[in-house]
Image (cartoon, rainbow, N blue to C red; front, side, top):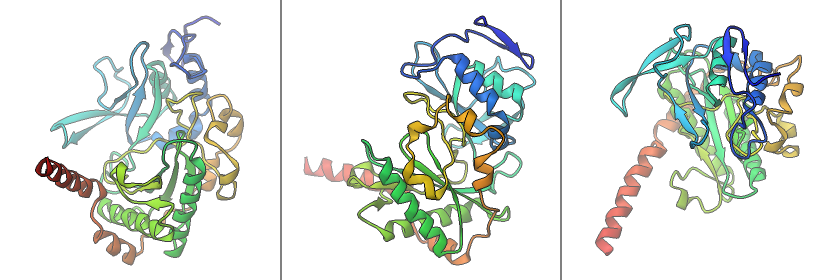
Length: 318
């Protein structure tokens, strides 16, 4: 086959180019992978404002939120006000195969949908705890921390599913009843992170400032409100092009992130959707969990104030 072709009306170009340094994959491999798993990844993207990480030849990877002017008219989109940049951003809604193929041709490797849909932005559908281990060969630590989160969930009557992040960490995802507000879910996420930390303070920490983590796994409770999380089955811009992949709780300690790549995953999902099978039904958030979380400061805000305090102390000491 040549370097160019057309699928579903989308022109695909330069398919034989390397995807990125260390990818062990070409642009064709990316296109073929996303096309092969489209029935698995599209349900997670559909109706949700989408950010992607693109890798253009000769450039560093970059996150794209605002759709470029040359985006085809048939790509669905939604306008969202961005408080940080004080402007409206036109996000894509990746609802179908054609749009997914268009993104693949744009060398969009990673797919990061919001936790809420465009029509209900104040009601995220999932609660996410992102477990970020320290540098090095530390995936096993992330697995152990995920088991702490599982215990914290069970202690309050909740259940979640787990997936590799596709990098070095783990995501625990909890489907939540649609009546829950973004504020309630953010509070519950903070409370669950704190409960997991209390179960094993030598392993897990909620310290947002990296220098305060002391080689422990960061239980990140900040995936809330308009936050995104990398979609299950999304490739990552990492050596070997790994994929964020669902793993059964009992199998977590028997896998490593590199087991799941754009080359290996299509065969694993042929005829089944492990993520859909793993996710429990949406659950009501316990009132006491939400109340507990409301009393816990938002980690990012707390870290900002602490950073300013430390900077002041250094200036005064100097």
